[in-house]
Image (cartoon, rainbow, N blue to C red; front, side, top):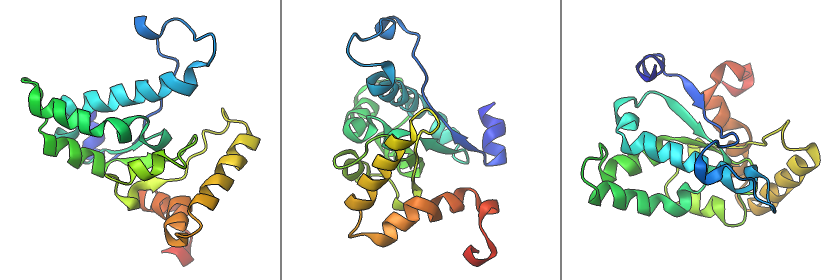
Length: 181
C-alpha cells in the first residue's frame, strides 16, 4: 500500500480518532479524548512510521500531519535519541530529522503562542499549512483560532500568507487560479 502511494506521489492527510488502546480506553473525567489523546496518537503513529524506516523507504508520500505536529515539536529530540540509542530501529538520527523536515503540518487547534515556534525549529516553512478541523471544531472556535494566528504572525505577513494559501497550493496546484500560477 505504501509503495503504491509513494509511486503516485500521493498527498496523505493523517488524522487521529478516538484511540482504542488499553492505555486510553477510559474516557478522562475532565477532558474529551481530542484534547490530549489525539496529540499522542498522532505522535505515536508518526514516530512508528519514521523509526520503522517507512519514511525513508517511501519519500514521495507527501504526508500532512495535523495539529502543528501534535507533540512532535516537543519530543523530536527524544525520537532522535531513540534512533541513536536503540538497536534494531530502521532509522538513523538524520533519517528522523529528514522526515520531520519533509512532512507537511497543518495548524489546526491552538498552535500559538508555544507550539508553532517549536514546530518551526525543524519544519520547512513552505510545508506549514492552515488547518481548522472544521466541521468537528465549531466555527466560532475556528474563527478564534484564525484571529489568534493572524495576530501572532502579524509581523510576518509573507509567512502568514504562505500558511493561509500558498503552501497548500504547492501540494494541490490544481486549485490555483491562473493569477496564482
